[in-house]
Length: 463
Image (cartoon, rainbow, N blue to C red; front, top):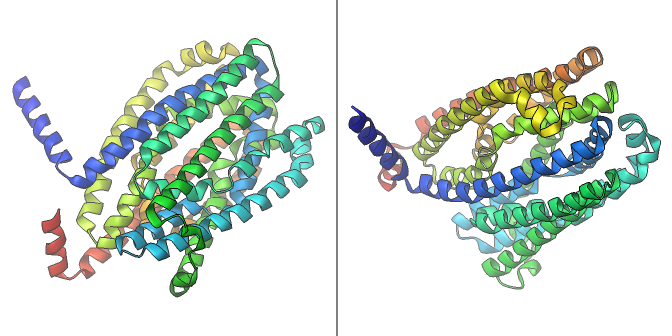
């Protein structure tokens, strides 16, 4: 009996890894997974030390300051990594190196300009952030100090996209680990010298600077390797024929991402604004523990998106469907197992890692896990729509969710606090992912029906 089960399992694994696309995804996921596990463990240790050192209220203010910068930066960002992955990948597949170099050049320049705008916004709006979010006007200098991170990240999105499309995941992973180790080293010193929030912010800033500069230099070196040292002098004329398409893609990914700031990424700011930094501290810890569920899942969209873009360009719909189905099975199984573990051991884990004063975070953790179970299982919902050429659909979904969530935040968070925020986040995940998956499946089926039978057979033979 046991031998029969093992044989069937062995056959299943062999069939799974027979697919070249799956093998490449697993290899690249392995690099990012190793990096993600290490950096997540380091990040959690950073958070534990900071939480123990600062206390609940100041720890909440720390989260507010870092998120304030992130939100303003992403507000003006055009998600250049996604633009680079889709179109540099497309031009590379079609053997158009001049267009690929021109696209990366214009993406880097646009991102540089957006970063400068973001830094100016952070500097000007820091007094409002200090007064209304941190509830302490004296923290304005801390907001402006951490805002410097935007200047170090001037072309990191474009750089990330370029390293992804050329499968430089090992290099990308190594940079992330080094940056995390640098941050942790400084935080350890701050912790044992009983430093304060300023020391923690400097640690974050230095680590981010090391990671961002290393990533940018690595991408520039890769560009020279792919297109020659004079790639940056490439004229932009080859992109004119696709100018409107490129602009539409960039605008839609920007709007979609900006709306996500409301529906998913600005939780701590809302909680601190409408309740207090103390509740923001509880919620920050709940989010940190919930992120354990995403450890092996978070790299998957990054490695899946370039592969999907290639397969869509080749119209290999069967490969697209196979990869996403297998990915959902693996991601969903893992998420369910970890969710059950946190359900059973979440409270003692909170007390042990963060001290018992952070136990009020446990109910929020349970609420968040329901949303993460759905979003992890269908981790590919957004990148699949981008790869298939529907960047506007996530924008529309996020717009509706943003409007609904704003109403929910205004009505519920002042009354129920961070628990309401957790419920709204989980609900937005479940609804948004479900709608996106249904749309993608419908579009994929339509394209499969429209494909000429001869091309479908050719693609099947290639697989």
